[in-house]
Each structure stands twice: as structure tokens, then as C-alpha cells.
Amino acid sequence: IYVYFDMDERTLLRLKKMIREKTLKKLDESEPPIELGLADEPGYPHQGVIDFAENKLTAGTGTIRVRGRFTNADRTLVPGLFARVRVKLGEPRPALLVPERAVGSDQQRKFLLIVGPDDVVESRTVTLGILEGHLRVIESGLKAGERVVVNGLQRARSGAKVKTISVDPLTLSDIRPESKSAPANSSPPSEKHETADPEKSDPEKSADPAR
Image 1: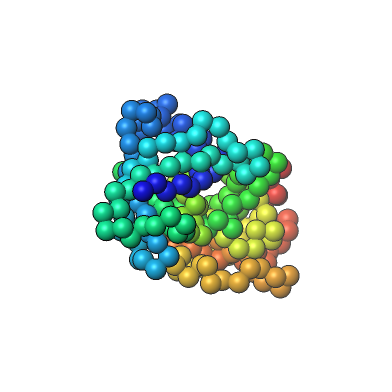
Image 2: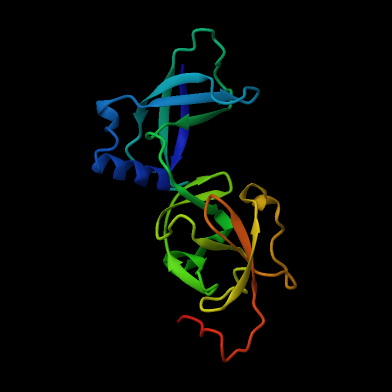
């Protein structure tokens, strides 16, 4: 049985990059594995392969149509069902992840607010990877163990000195968004996350905001 799904533009560009770098074979040279799960099934118990992809994007949605083929020996899959699909693009690898809400946008760049050893905030341009739940993979621009502002981005300006409070990264999604009275927050990627409050200090002794 055939299963059709749409691939977004970002994923398509990532695949093309992997093909150029020889970390992934072209579709016409192999049939990449694909996994499928139905609405009432945990995980992705059905195994198949990708055997076709259109050669152009759909203008209205910015996606490309892809087709997976499944043997369906037990006839569990029937036409018209909705399903979840997962495509394995490579072997597991270590990665740095930060909460998606920690990523800021400034014109055409993406950035994180990093808290340095001296507790001074730095704005740093980063390269984004895929989104895993509420966490975003950071491909470049961030090192393991560095602290990242995850809440109160408007208060923790680049060049400002802050105080940090450690929190469990697994509970970050439960933290309420900042309000006018809420303190700013910060954290190290993947391992632990922290909150950062602007430190009350003499303005003449604090660092000037980076321009």
C-alpha cells in the first residue's frame, strides 16, 4: 500500500545538503526506510521505504509530496486512514538543544543570548537544526556547557549583567512566559537550564549594551 505525505522546505533543503556532502544517497540510488504509526498505535510499528518524491514544491504550502511503500501483510493499513510517519536521515549523533523560545530573530539572522562566566549577556548568531518537541538543535555557534537565556529575553539585553538560577530542562516547557513583572531567565543547552535576573548594580560599573 502507498502512503503519501508532505515534506517541508527546510527538511528538503537539509536533505539536499546531505546528498551534496555524500552523507545521504539520492532517492534514485536507494529507497530510504520510513516508519509509520496509526492514531491508536504507540510509536512507529510499520516499516516501509520511500519510492517516489515529486520534483517541485507546491507553491501554496511550500512543501513537496513524498510517497512511502509498505507491504501491509496483515492489511492493517487501509486507504483513507491518517497516520504519523518518520524518516531516518542518518545515524544518531550528539547535539546541543535549547528551548525553541530561546531563539531570537534579528532581520535575517537567528541568535541566542549567552551568559558568560562573568554573568554578562552576549548576543551570538547561531545556525539552527531541526526541532525536537519544544527543543531546537543548534548546529553551530554554541558550545556545550554555555548558559543560554530562555525566558525574559526582552529584559536580558546584550551587555547587561545578570544573576542565574538553575532549573531542570525537562520542566522548562512548564515555565510560564514572561510578564511585565517576571524576571529574565537563562540556561546551558541540553544538560540544565537556568533563569537569569538582571542584577541590581551601579549603572556606571555595569557593561554597556553591545551594539
